[in-house]
Length: 321
View (cartoon, one colour):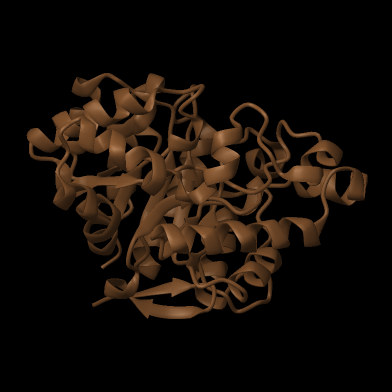
């Protein structure tokens, strides 16, 4: 049984329990934080709200969340640890890099990028000794660009040497899910240790089958954005069909939710009630939305209770072990 690195220390994979494979506590850009200060972000209110919401998530049945916030998406390991110390939920932190086309990566030597990530996996994140339990990578609508070839390769090499699984954000419209899996495989990563994320955005079952045919997992993991990305009913029907097709053991569920993203919120208004104005119901249910809202939709689509349990408990365990 593999051990899984959590923020509070390693645990056996079979102790993960109900696991949300792709969540965030906070994504707040460090350049904005350093220059705008409390106009943009405040540490203690985010910690307090995260503690409240994760305690509620535990009551809803959640045992573990994977925080999919890599280096250049505003990861704050000190904030994550401050939350983890106060909640009854395991938190798995990520190493890796997001999909920005930025000069800090464009002009870096590939070997140096690899060394940055390798150091985190070996020594821990930002001097805390907290080791990542999962690697995070990302592509977007442009697909696997030259800079992303560099970052994906670095992530794949570190995942292979550190024996860590990979979660990869991707845009379903790019159609590059199978290519991502192939790139990681060229680095020595077993496809069964890769999750191709945001597949809940797609209603193209043929494409989802092509991704699954590589041997990877798929993340039906953008359920927080059902008001703008894809309806819960569509996602449930797609899951039901994929289970009927024999892929039920390789589907993972999550929200892609967080307490604060800093991408669209006005901090002053947001801090007063921590309500996501586009979807107040999501703000209320937060990390418990799958259990409270989506599970009944799955059942209405004909998905059996044992299959729901597998997606939330068994599949994450097998992905990590």
